[in-house]
Length: 158
Image (tube, rainbow, N blue to C red; front, side, top):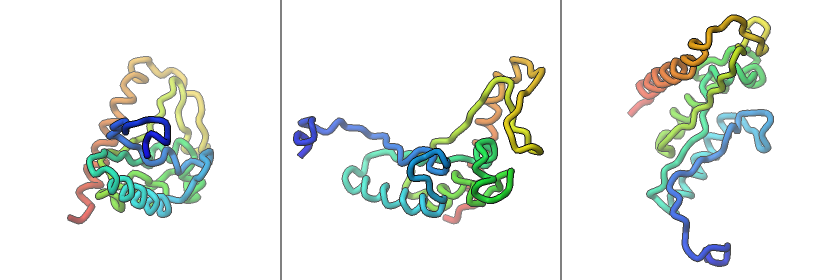
């Protein structure tokens, strides 16, 4: 069967991502979180029937990403995404797909001299930011996301 598709043996790929930014209105196939949770679980179960040793990567986005990408406003009508809302993709995946994922791909975009203005709900220039602060931003965001993930996992029963 595999040779009919161009290769005589399976490639042995062990890490598989299910979707990417399916929350973004720019994506073909964009869908609400509740629908993607169902889709993720169906894909994960079907893939593991073929190879139970694969590692599955879910496509998350914490509220900070959904706020900065303006998807929180589109999904909930609020500029700032709230934890546990339809704009909290990482939280939803952890709460409803944990048994069908091994990794969570988190989204974070760091642009020099840019910031998200909460009052205007737009990205605007960040003036006077020292280079060292811009360099520290990714590490600070990773730490904050890790702390939030731990809080999510504490809330999940079992």
